[in-house]
Length: 282
Ligand SMILES: Cc1cc2nc3c(=O)[nH]c(=O)nc-3n(C[C@H](O)[C@H](O)[C@H](O)COP(=O)(O)OP(=O)(O)OC[C@H]3O[C@@H](n4cnc5c(N)ncnc54)[C@H](O)[C@@H]3O)c2cc1C
Image 1 (cartoon, rainbow, N blue to C red):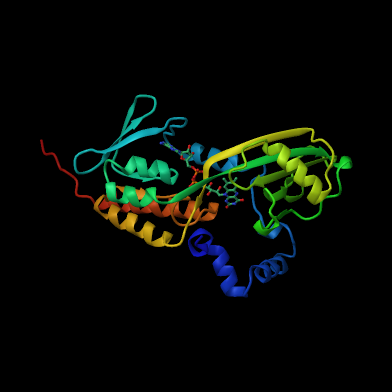
Image 2 (cartoon, helix red, strand yellow):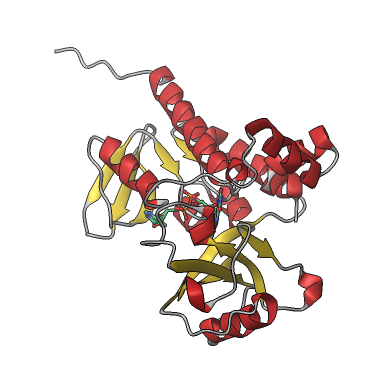
């Protein structure tokens, strides 16, 4: 995988501090709060971000997919939507996952579409478990990651109730989320409970368990990713009303996704402003 493309911030931290651990220590010293400095979320979870985004839009359309994107003459696009309606737009930011973006681009921009289609996506499964605190060992820290050499199916565990406030009704409860290595679809909750018993000594039965799989939810940037993306973006130069954004391109972290969305929106806005208008005189 390309670290520079996937987690540019980590590379920066390593360059500035010689190692990620030293960079994390330096950040802790700066804020004086060992755990909170590296993590940030919203009070009621990440859904707050999308809810705020929707409420800031003048005419939001949710729960509707774009099925087809085609050119409208020389200066715009027509989008066919899954509810049978159409949208006409002067500019379009494609912020969908790579596979979807490649498919939508196929008709208008086949070359960039091919470049985007080569960006890899893998699925990931998370198992969330709630326990009564007095039935499990005391959890310290915010969780742990399990290196591949350990040969385990669990890739990492977040102690959500330690990491964030407001995730459990009181200290009598503990909430954990484990991520599985890809491909582990068979009885994921059972795998996690077995490995948690071995790794953390949790033998109690959870009072709640939820399994969630994000199909193709993680983009994996292989070596050469930056060149592939540059190729796709150069190819889109011919279509000033189109821009790419989101986790497929310039970093999978939320900060990078938001930054790429802003850049794409600015690009489209500038292109639309520059476009010569047809003046109709009566
Ligand atoms: C399990 C997991 C844990 C993560 N943890 C972290 C973390 O702790 N910190 C961090 O920074 N990042 C984390 N990430 C990464 C980060 O969440 C993602 O990279 C980021 O959310 C991607 O945002 P996005 O807007 O590019 O894509 P998405 O959030 O995937 O949004 C794409 C949107 O496109 C929509 N869509 C798809 N097809 C169509 C269509 N045809 N028409 C219209 N809409 C369509 C989808 O419905 C979706 O809403 C995590 C990712 C996963 C999967």
